[in-house]
Image (cartoon, rainbow, N blue to C red; front, side):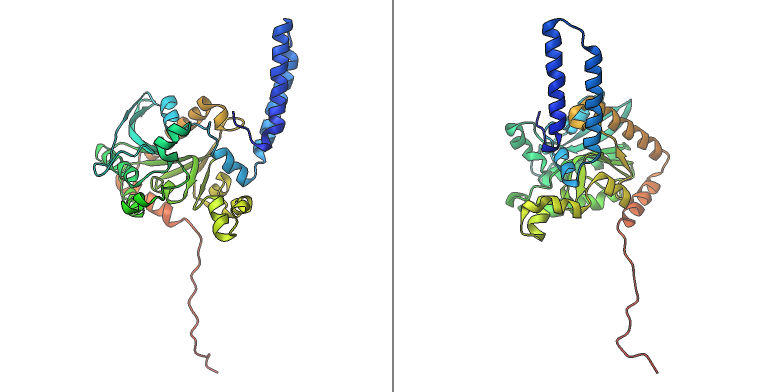
Length: 327
């Protein structure tokens, strides 16, 4: 497993546990008390490290290649999943997956970005960066959900929409903009969950919902720290400074009212325990579906509209006239 610099004390501790287990097995002795003590210390150390991550360290965790992706959650949460393909205009974008699913006996339409586990699969999935046809496929499925009166759940995990020439020629910005407009008007519950990276318009293209949730170590931002640093500071190596300024962590987003809930992750991050991470996400989905079930289509639209009208803080002041005040 890939480890980060800030995890080195934890890795050393886990190495000691592995060595003790190997020695006990070879010598045929019982070291259960010693192992239990070391494991408690490991868990305490892990909790301390992950409770004090910097914003950029959280970005690194959100990008961890062993984190569960959309299809991992589907496999672990859903009784069945019927994937649907294509945007009926150009092609089937494998960076965006979606279809009918059943969670705890409830039928939903589930849509999400999908990354790959290795180089070959990442090339196939375009590193989770969807083309216009991916967003048009997502909208096709959301409109189908609206006709079938099924709730929509989206999983957001992308560094951003694909910025290539072909994507721009096929209307990348227009495809995302149409999704934003149409999602506001859908008459079914929409729950959006940031499970890893939430990058720019690529994330927002499936991110307009009645509830926006985020995993504890995921991030959601208008731009990546590296991109921000390159533009503002003309130096992409100042990514940590940019991450601090962007206020992109789950905790920041909750304080600003951008998200409704932070879904806790297993100790040491979702990449350490896919099954537990999926159980926590499933619980959150069912809870919010219950809360939205009693709302009518018009109430769902109004609630969604008011949610996004309230994002951001601004003040209005009447401009003073340029003429001098009368004496």
